[in-house]
Length: 407
Image (cartoon, rainbow, N blue to C red; front, top):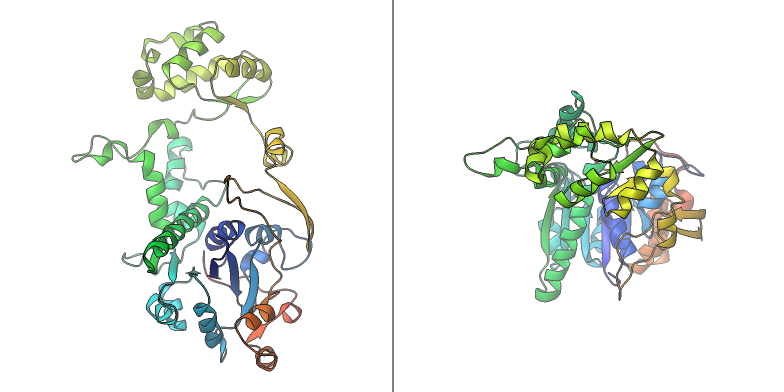
């Protein structure tokens, strides 16, 4: 994406994750921040205020420009920036971005071929459109939290901000497709990505099941995924993650386990029958797995081609041998010191991505970007003195949480 310029008016996680990927792939991402800055600057550990590990990673390779869009002249500066960028992406509510004068129709008048991406909690055409949205609430309303009740009897959230990240990934591919269309036709367009709609699509990929048909043949739930016994198996000395799925793998497992009685149930004889009785299958395997040590199971299961791996913590992954051999983590000296970035998960033979610099200090690039827009020294000085824009030295050391747009 070298040569593509992205104007990023997003905050928190969904939007910044989307634009992080574009920055890794070479795009010039200009992050527009309020004087208080993105909330993720302040919500996880870091070496200094306003530069948390979460922020520094999510916003790596971007440039920070602080503009007070509520001050006189702030929207004029943003309008000039729009004319010089290929992509406009925001995560504000439709009403808020409209009040500022930067809805799609307004932006298109400034840059007719703009690729304009709305990242919303809920799509504009439904009755939830004006509800505030965060990852927890989207997990709740999308059905994900209630899938946890199928397992434990009570709804629960996934231990990761999955809705934000899935929506961010969706926005990335949507923007890339729109840019491809522009390359062919010269036409820009408007994109809408709703976290709610994205998560429903994501979950229904497998859970739709028999509810796809008219009339439905079953409720929308993939029973294997919500079995209470679908969890790592306890061994004689620890745990192992294994999935014995097709008939070949099942027969190999019978031989490895010496054909114990719990596995010889006639209902387990075929994949189709095991699928209908999956909870009983998992329970039977659980009984058998306790008979041997983790290392013994892994040796035999992996030799038979059965998917089986040890359990690892996130801390252990920092020194995982496979990730080390694949050069996944990127260690480098940056303006924020020596950092160890999670790497780019995709590989390109001709146009590989690269992690460039740590996430920017608040307003670090304000002056430089304004100069690139054609503003002279006196104009920039006047904006700084008026508080319309701020550069790094003028940015406050701390900021109240709550700044920026909702995820």
